[in-house]
Length: 227
Image (cartoon, rainbow, N blue to C red):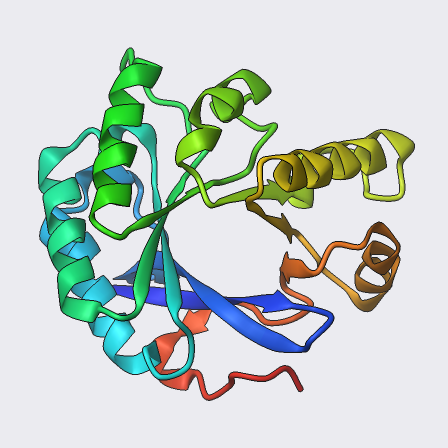
């Protein structure tokens, strides 16, 4: 059995939830776990469970994000299912997060671009997830940024802490990159109060992390404002 767990994306400075990231999990004997291979999850599950989650969350936020890797992006069944789902859940917007996950396939940037154009034309927004990691290199982000409305930088993807000067430089680089290209910048990996307070000095308003809320089943959610 599959279900989406949700984690809020928050605006720190006005203390509000602006959207939710949906994280697909499968119920196993060991409890809820991410699928071993997201590429093997049927398209109707990816989209159908999204519609189900949207029915619970549509009155709380206007945007729901779902993760797709490059192999899933090129799966016509997944693409068509998400476009149909977007029509069903309007005015709530679907945002596809293109993850940094690498695949064994040879995938061309132009093929990814064509699918992202199709999403945008259907009212689905595009987020480039975990920039500076995996497949989402700076070169890839530069190529795809014209189709994106958001980039996300994940502190947890690096060995160095945010207190290291190198990491601070990367946060500033991607924050300014987003501003230059007029897209939203989301900083992920805010794990505790100390990091949250420290990030205030970087003037980054949109954030995500365990400090604000851990991923949980939709049915347990009852928040729109931070406590």
